[in-house]
Every structure is written in structure tokens, then in C-alpha cells.
Length: 300
Image (tube, rainbow, N blue to C red; front, side):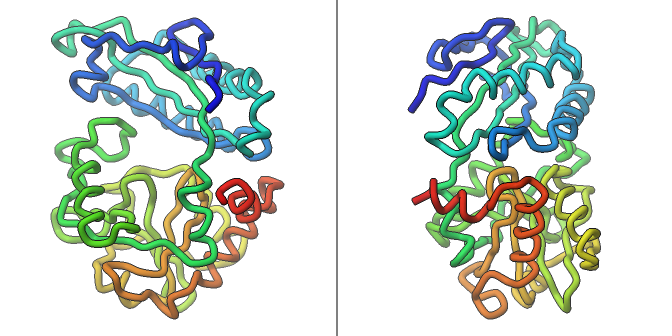
């Protein structure tokens, strides 16, 4: 692994030299917001949308990073440039931005904030095979945070429920990805992705009341409109997933990740569906990269 050059509290240092204060509230209380962008052939994708979401999260939780949107954007683009010499080995990068409230025993007294922007390889090896075979979903008992407790539109690291959901998933299907529900049993989202299913040619996805407003989710909306594929937001139950014609996740790394099983039940004909493939082809054309081919070259 390369020791990628990283922005940390105003300095450019090797990632191995990044050290968080043990009293930082990001560490002791999950008092931190973050965002993740990926590159395609070294070019960042929808940077503005990601930075806007990061700042919405910071505004909501009342963290001031001491930097403007443009400064965070410029830092995020520069971290790619500073590591370009090693990008060829891994294909493309994920750009991670995180901002903590800083050290302090109480939120009201904490500071100054900790700001870090780093790159890491896109984890192609974790999902490259799913384009051919599809991944598996598991609907877990662990629930999403209700908006009345902690609004899921904040992208934060206070995520013990996601950790428990992952452990619960492994008990059911070691290759599975968690799918959470709200307090009424409606499907919400995965721990790293948004959930979509297709029935009768219509893409269906949960509304954004109890989920993260995913940037990749937004790209699916845009591509569906471009391809004239109907898309609706509506409450979905496990029944809807089990009886779907096809299903998929959307997230930063894989973009569109076909799902062929849920709770060990076959979805549709058990193969990645035609709409998932259409979306992947259109996404590849939009970014000028063969998304599936790149993932399979670098993912093994």
C-alpha cells in the first residue's frame, strides 16, 4: 500500500503520520461528519454535490471547519493530483473528507475542529464479481435511526447500528450486504448504499425521509430520466423486494451493484437485470470509463 499524501489540519503529510488526538470528540463520541467521492480516470465525480452535502451535514450538527466550500473543494482536487503518480497501480481513488468537532469533554466546549482529506484505492476487489453474478442482500432486525432521533440525511460516523447490522448480516449470509428498515418495517437503505428494485419496468426506491440522500442515488435518478425509465419513490416492504423483477444497490464505488438474492431468496431469474445493465452502460458513457471492465481488471 502506498503511503498516500494527505491533507491534515492545514498540512500535507503521509497518511501514516495522521494522528487523531485521543480526546477528539470524533473518536470518543462519533462527533464527526464525512463524505466520500470517487474518481473516474483520475477525475473527481460530482464533487460539488458531495461538498454541498458535507456542508449541509456540518451546518446541521453545528461544526465550523474554518474552511469554505471552495477551499475544501480545492483541497480535495489537490489530494488527487498529489497522488496521481501512484493511481495507475490501483485504477482510481476514493476521496475521503472528514471533519470532527475537535477535542473536548462536551460538544459546546470542543475545538478546534479536525479536518482531513485523504485518498484510498477504490475497493474493486470487494464488488467486481457482482456485475456478473449479483450481490446478496439481507434484511436485518437492526433499524435505521428515525429522523426524530438523528436525521439520516446527515452523513456521520455515529454508526453503531450499522456495525450491528453488518454482524447480523454475516450470521445469515456471509456474502450479504445489510438492508435496514424504519420503525414501520419499510425498507430504508444499506450501510453504504441506497436500495432500488424494479417491477414491470419501473424503478422503485424508498423516499428520502429516513435515508441518506445519496449522490449516486441522484445519478440513478438522472440516468433513469435520460433513458426514459420510470422511477418512483414509495414505501417498500420486504415483500416488494422478494417479488421484484430485479434489484440493485447504488453507491460511490460500484455505482450500480446488481442484487440477485435477498434473505437467501432468488430475485427474479437470479441474474443481474436489464435495467441494472442499462444504467451501468449509461453511467460508463457519462464518465468516459468502462465501469465494469475497470472493476474486473483491478478487482481480480
